[in-house]
Structures are given as C-alpha cells and as structure tokens.
Image 1 (spheres, rainbow over the protein chains, first blue to last red):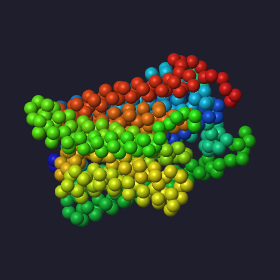
Image 2 (tube, each protein chain N blue to C red; image 1 turned 60 degrees about the vertical axis):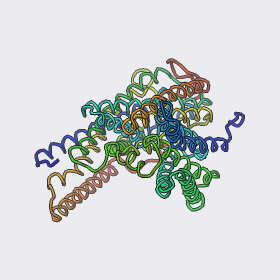
Image 3 (cartoon, each protein chain N blue to C red; image 1 turned 120 degrees about the vertical axis):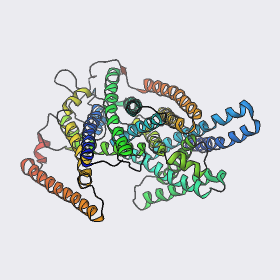
Image 4 (spheres, chains in turn green, cyan; image 1 turned 45 degrees about the vertical axis):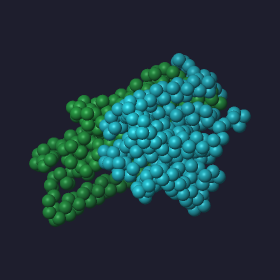
Length: 302
Length: 275
C-alpha cells in the first residue's frame, strides 16, 4: 500500500503510541511477578532467612518470556485471520490466548521455585498465587495486543515481507530486552532496597536482605507494581516508543526513492544515533558528579 | 537429594530418541497404511497421523528438559534460558540440513537430522569445555543430548504442522506462514522452563519431569491451533489432545508441589526465622 506523507506520519505516530503502551505494561508485568533482574534477590532472600510474600515468576528472562507470549498471540491471530475473522477480533483473541499461556507458565514457576526452597521453610501462599496471577495475565494481554497490532500494521499496511508471528516475536523480544534493561533498575536496585541510601550500590553483605514490609502490612507484588508504575514503567514505555519512533522517522519523513535519498536517510539516522550518544554521555557524567563514587567501606559499616 | 531414586539419564535418552523418532515416522506410516486399508478407518488413520509427530515432540521435550537439568545443575542460574535457546538453534540447523540433503530419500531425513544435531552439539560442547573452559563435567554429553533433543522437537512439532517431513512441504507449510517461529520459541521455552522454574536446592527430578510433560503439552496445544490453519481437522485433534495431556500433567505437577513444599498456606503472616 502506498501512503502519502500525512498518512505515513499518522501510522508512525500510532506505532509509536502502541510501542509506548506495550513497553510500559511490559515492565509492570515483569514487576508484578519479580521477573529477571529483581528475581535473583527474591530467590535469594529465603536462603538468608528472609521469608517473604512476593511472587517468584521465573519463567525465563524477560525477552524470552515476552517472545513466548507474543509469538503465541501472533500465531493464534494468523490462524483466526486465515479463518476470515475481523482483524481487531483476531488480535484480541490472539492476545488473550498468549496472556493465558504466560499466566500458566507464571503459576508453575512460582509453585516450582517455592517447592524447591523447602529447607528454608518458605511457605507457598495460595492467596498470592490467586490474586497476582490474574494481574500478570491482564498486563500481558495489553502488551500482546499492542505488539501484535504493531506486527499487523507492519505486515498489512507497510507490506513488510515477514509473517505476523515473526514480527510479533521480534517485538516481544525487543520489549522484553528494553524492559529488562530500563525498568528493572527501578525495582531491583531501589524498591527491594528502599531502606538503604539512594545510589549506595548493592554490597554483597546486603544480598537477599530485601524489604518485606509495606506501607501497611506485609509487602506483596501488587505493592511493588504500584511503586514501579510511578517511574520505572513509564520510562520503559518512553524508551521503547522512542526506539520505534526514531528508527522509522527518517524513512517516513524523507520517503526515499532514489539512491541519493537513501543515503540522506541513512545519514539522518546516524545523526540521531550520534545525538543520543552525546545525550547519554551527558546524563551519565551528571549522575556520576552528583552521586558517585561509591562509598563502599562506609556503607558496609553502617 | 541422593536418597531419592532418580530415573537414569540413559533411560530418558532412550525414551526421547525412540519416542521422538517413532512419533515422527508414524506420521509417514499411518497415511500409507490408510491408503492400503481405505474406507473410514483409512481416512481416520490419515487424519490422526500428524498428531503423533507432536507426541514424539513431547518425548523429546522431556528428554531435553532432563538434559538441561543435568547440565544446569552446575550453577548455571541465568544460563538456563540460554541453553534452551542454543538447543533449538542447533536443532533447527541440523533438522533442516537433514531433511534438505535427504530430499530424494525422505525416510532417512529424521535420522540424518538427529545424527547431524548430535555432531554439532558434540563440537559446541567440546568448545565450551576445552576452549572457553567452563569446567562442567557433563558439558560435552549434555550439549550433544540437548542438540539432538532440539532437532527432534523441531521435526516432531514441525511434522504436526506440515503433515510430513518432505523438505518442500515443510518449507511451504511451516516456514512461509511463520509457524516455525512458534515451534522454535515455544519449543525452546518448553525445554528450558521446567528446570528454570524448579531451580533451587530442593529440586526433584519427578516434579521437573512432570513439568516438562506439561510444557510439552502446552507446545502441542499451540502447534495444534497453528495446524488448524494448515491441516484442518488434524490440527484440531492435536490441540484437543494437547489440552487433555496438559490438564493431566499440570495436575500431577501440583500434586508434587503440595507434597514437596514446606507448607502451603491460604494466607498468613511470615513464619518467624532467626533473621
């Protein structure tokens, strides 16, 4: 399908918005279950005598588990589209099946990991299982819906030569990788060690000593997602949204047709990367000046 | 851990290889038999044939999950998912090579794939052990087994979608519509998840194996949904059987969890410990 400039900008904006929502919800979904980076401390805590009421969703790393739910959603969507379902309906049903499959994997990982910690007396709390798993499924449903919609737009409107399950899988892995690198810090380093000084770094002696009490009562995974929804999730969303937007923007705005145009597009893309590198370096420099260097000895003593 | 009797690795290798190959070859044998017998029974044999490919795939998943378990026990925490991915990576290369090179004699395809995968796994295992120096005693054997299981998973579930293991049909029905991604990724999670989800000092083989059956059945169900698009009724049968198997083994896994867990509470405060 050939699109004019306005229409392609509209499609690009829609894709950016879908990616932003997907990225945000992906990070929150991983926080509900303490997946990936924060998981190691949740797993370690009972070993250090810190029993807790936090979900342990060790399906696999975030890229792999999100790839799993997205490719399942994409596959079901393709089958339904083949059966002449209305596209929106097909995507919603596909996303639902993908989310249910992820939910099943989440239950087996929580039950399995807790049952493998018998010697530390970590109990398996069934109420945590009952009200956290639907939250995981709900978050993941929105992620799947956005990612398969992205794949559908690319396949159907932008005429990419790849199939929908393939594009959905790539988006799932991307969302998982960005959620793992951007949002997890907010949960793993901050929320779990909220009672330590900000930016103190994780000393080995603190391993497993996670915060287990909430504002009222005992902390659970829903409290954690409430905290992460304030900053970690949206930051992840913006990161994924910008990746989608900035990587497609030069080609959309230039509408390249001749070899000279292609080169111009590539140069604009490189310019964006260059500006981002400078921006990142400035942020890093500023953070080091404000918070660093680590005060190792003092932290261990206090 | 040592007082509990475990299933010997060799038995699981036999289960995986024989079960996997049997399933894959039955998808070839049943339509031939069906043609000979004819009538309703013949037709039925033809329809249910692809389902056996998926059942063979489940055998390979159980074997692969146990191989992952044996290698990962040497302290591969975050490396468990990577092992699952490398298994399918080696498996897909080997199985495609096997059925492509044997395009003239399709019957030899799966065996050639299995052998190729074992050789690739052996080389990668040797590299991991002697060049990267990972110092895991079972690395070479484990990698060989994982790669071989990966190739049988790709072929087994692929056959359930394509209906047979001829290279041309395989490419048209499994690759062109993107279903290979489902086979590849969900198959990888199926063999990496069982050990990753039961990781811990009190991990037990029985529980991990039941979980492997359950994840294999989930793969079978989703592949069945995909196969509805390519094969119609056969896909629906694969899906239904997958759901039934999943219910059985998910229940068995939970029974083991209730038995093994320190305590299963409806709700409650954290028990007192020294910390």
